[in-house]
Image (cartoon, rainbow, N blue to C red; front, side, top):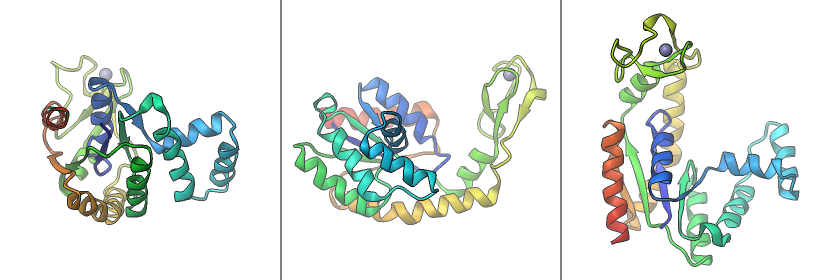
Length: 216
Ligand SMILES: [Zn+2]
């Protein structure tokens, strides 16, 4: 089965992707990793990517599509991919559709971690990291207490770029690009909406049920 995971920045998509990957023995496809890997291996494509990125330009859809084609054509990963952060726009989604068919596979489902602007803001603005032990807390959702954290509150700091304006801008950009894709997968009957405001365990539970129903 191949799965696509959608979710705005701050919705816990990365965490879910990692748990799903492990639990269902899937291979996680993140375009960032694919790009870095290609540069690292110094392939022809890697050199082209490095040239583009060094100039601060966005890597083209064509290059991304080539990288995805490479993964889909690799027998090692046949029908066990989870896409995290890809596709990024409707064009890429349509291309993925062609590619999976070409390599005799399919997209089994598209999971959308649904959440609203307010909870994203609280999730990101509330994020605290302990400079002493590295644990991450959230002053709204998972505050540091005597029970879960021995260092106490004095070592907790926030990331300076986590301000409200940046978050709202990122969220809006995400929605503009993502809503057309969600409609695309909805028409194909592949879209599952998941409450992204729930606890990590609850979200994973829901996802597990969906995946189990696909396997059955
Ligand atoms: Zn600590």
